Image (tube, rainbow, N blue to C red; front, side, top):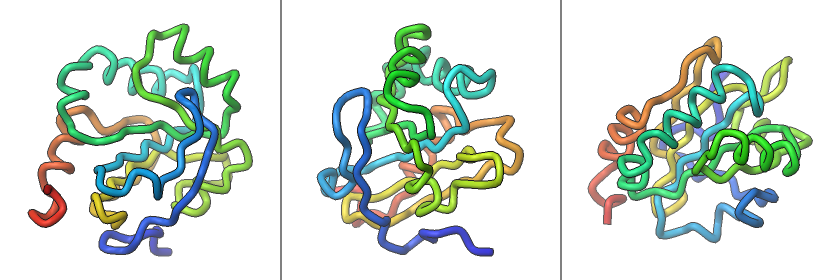
Length: 155
């Protein structure tokens, strides 16, 4: 079954509460946006993923994109995860899994690890779904995905 949205399709709009306040995708037109779907706060791989971004904060900031993590835990859980690990990526609470489902990042066990890169016009330009969720895209892989955006999207 094809994942939605597919590369080249408009990214569906959504709004979720987040650790840095409410986040509505359509309010970020004109910016590159990276959606990092992940299974759960304080899990081994998710902790490694978000701590790796924290540890390379300067390179992460240089990506030139708005980056948010999305999982099914509530804001209290997200805030605790951030505080416990000094994380730098804002986290969005998709408690009912609706956004994960909208982006085909939801399975039997809940939110699956996936990356969706959206260009300045709101079009999906890159998607990476992790088969087992035991790995994640590094800062270098995210940079490569952003660098590969079409020239018209990089302005």
